[in-house]
Image (spheres, rainbow, N blue to C red):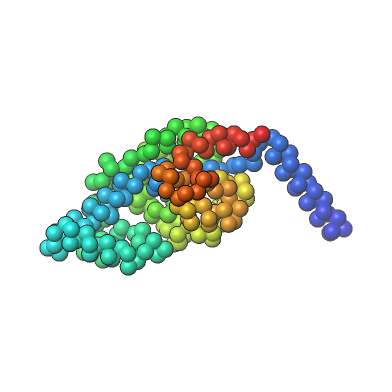
Length: 236
Ligand SMILES: [Mg+2]
């Protein structure tokens, strides 16, 4: 009986998924990376390559160029696979520069959205649950999302919430938390590994965004605008 019941349940599940596919594209959540995707890297660049070297130079009595070299060497020694790399306060503490939060607030005017960001969010917000999946720590997201966070029903920071970069484990945990199957999620982002390879490996429909056409991948999107017709196409 258990076997029959199991088969029946499977049949219902299959039938449901066919009906669902006929009715819509089965996508429940559209997820976005933040830096390089919704927001330019100006704010971050100003922190890493102006604010920190500037303060370092004053604190340690070096000129700006010397300070930049020292700071860059330190960044390179950690690398973007380790969590410290993303943690501004880690660097402020390591270089003895004081409180990172206060310094970051001064740079709020550097936050800039790409020209397509607000329009695409507006077009999609009534059709899908919009979500953020970023590797930026929350102290960054607080600034980066200030003007657009009302569009999102959930915001995930892999480094702050899950203590990891956007690995397959992070993507699985995010889907569990959202209560959806990976196949019901579309994600778009500009990092080949963290926004494309890793989410696609667990079944998320991932799109790589390559605004400057640098990756040489024909399938990459060049603008968020391309996402809207793609979603419409999958409905047919
Ligand atoms: Mg990015």
